[in-house]
Length: 495
Image (tube, rainbow, N blue to C red; front, side, top):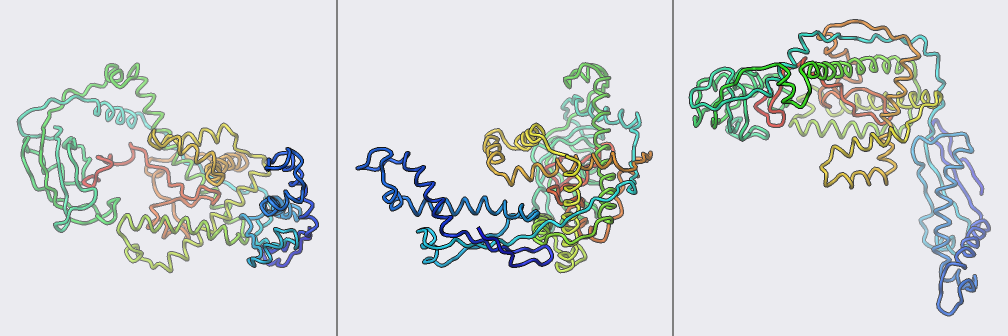
């Protein structure tokens, strides 16, 4: 096999590979001899089929197997022998001339093909001792735990139907249809929706207009969606809801005791408090983790500047750009609505893609040198976590998809690996805990230039490394730190 480099420019490489016809013939004969003992052909005893006859019958198909074997095996070995790592699967080109291809399959010509690929640049991991991050820590006060316990108890509260007018604190059950400019809008309708008046679950003004209503009443409620409403195509718009009250119920006493906990399947009120505190601390801990990771990645980004493989960047940009356009379409917004142009957005998202790829390569190099791996058990847990998100009837199909799709498994492995590398780095750098308020922890960080458009159109995706975790969103704000929004899937009467 003759290997000739035909291009070496920056990260781009092109290699010409020539496999002599004699080598191809040798590989083919080995396959024919192997097949001789296995095939059954009428007129010949087992194992006695002459090689020339086997070649006539199976020669082309077996030579095609030889070609595929050379392509799959030699490509990897050629790049490894050159001491290089390909950024993506190399592009392979062969002759498109049918006559030439026939000659190769007949064993009458050398087999030539070309490899085109980009290499991963050599990355020298520098001393990490100069990196320092601040870990914001919020100690959850007892009153936050008690407030959440009260909300849990409220959800278990009993209500008694009555025929009178609804007052603040009563639960009404409603059917509603919302319209903007006389046209019903998606998500603006609900049936049998329970709503506790005064809970502030719906947008401001909605619940107030139901005070005094009775079962059977039909009301027209006019409200204006907040300017910062999550569905941007509704933000700031006036809507009229046709509402039918189907039931009014008065609340029973709010009891917060062991019996309340037992009604929820827990042994005691103390156990309920313990679980609630753990959930709140976990939610705030996720926000702490995200802020620490952001600081770490920002400093690594400033520390490492090198040319990233263009195909990796293009692939990452495509992922980001597709998500941006899906978000815009869902929100019925345009780039003009986001105070930018498509050209400007493309340029900024390309910067973001480049950053993610660079950081992904840096983290990969750090992880490799530190001997960090993702175990089979960790992959299995991650796979089952993905499978659980699908209905029972689809779970086996999803499981088989992951088992038979190496790219899907790689995408599953990447964020696990990245988080383990981050864990490793946090043991190597200076980390200082700093007590902060809830407001400080939940405040958005200042964003670098490459991130600004992403906050608007891409629904706040974080700027993490590009090792597969490219769409990780900022941690959700804990329930105790935001207004409760319900009904969560209906809308779009809620805040």
